[in-house]
Image 1: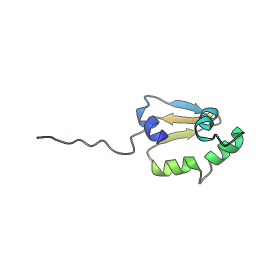
Image 2: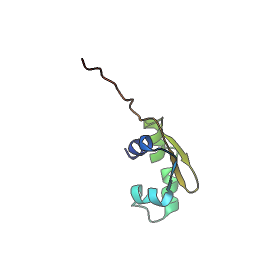
Image 3: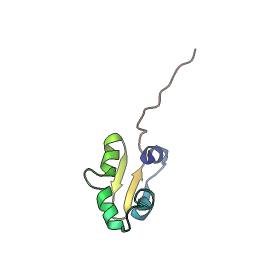
Image 4: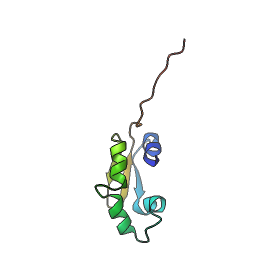
Length: 82
């Protein structure tokens, strides 16, 4: 849900630091490195989110995640009213 809201509302690239991501999604981790390792595992939360939202444009970097403007996961539907 976090990615769905953030990515389609962006007007430019946005860095979210690992510290910021951990504060939102890793309260059970006392250290940043184990959280980062689990978050980016092939079967981890980021991979699952990307599988559900393949249009998401996210770059994993040493500093954190770079979020890039992305198409919404559900296309806008236009309805003609007569």
